[in-house]
Length: 287
Ligand code: HBI
Ligand code: FE
Image (cartoon, rainbow, N blue to C red; front, side, top):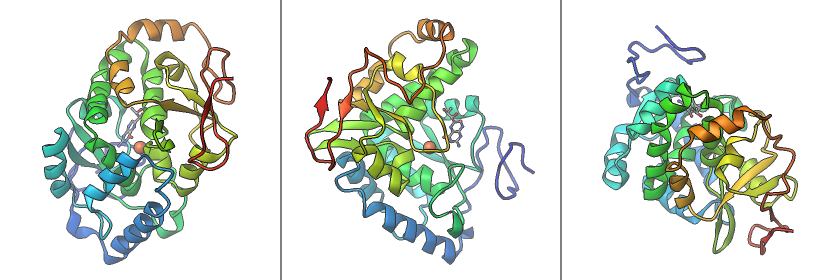
């Protein structure tokens, strides 16, 4: 029986931490074929738009030919950065999610979208979770950040900062950009599992691209059903890890006293990046 909401399918046994067995042998040949199609279509557009270290780590996962087996991937991943993949039926409650991250367990949804959902999906499926998120778990700094991020869950829940902490996940794990020697690149799972948003996020002049600053991110609202109006840009993943080493409660207190920032706007204090056409063009900073 299903304990949570919007859990697709019926799972015989779901644990208290919402983990289930992946039951890899139950995937059909049609599902493996759809996985190959999604993987091939998405991976061919990555060069020039996705962060090079994301691409390198994706290749390490060797997941092009069939739906990945979480146990086999976890063995390699654990040796690299101490993370395991755990199978879940879908979105799990925030406190459960944070606890998994704090213990270096990344929840990966077990079901794959339907062919008619090829381009857009409301909730994350195995393709979004695996193709989008798992490669970055191979990056030691990002992997340490995500565990430190999860450990901040209980304090955020206790101090009324859950919405603000969740924005760090949304903007910096799902939709993060990073400046690299080759130019602006996408590393966020939300764009890298979407062909259109990967390209849009790196080349389209429309959205705001704001230099990462912790309190600015935590204070900025977001919509979940369209391309982002604001992306935040890192110079290095170290900035994420360092951000988890400052006291967050004072930030929650300050933000509770003012309205959220509309992502369609920018602040005079923002350091802005401007893109000029192709992804590899020189990015101007400021003005
Ligand atoms: N559950 N399985 C799963 N995957 C997520 O990405 C996820 C979640 N629960 C909550 C959540 N994300 C966000 O609200 C985080 O910001 C906490
Ligand atoms: Fe995600």
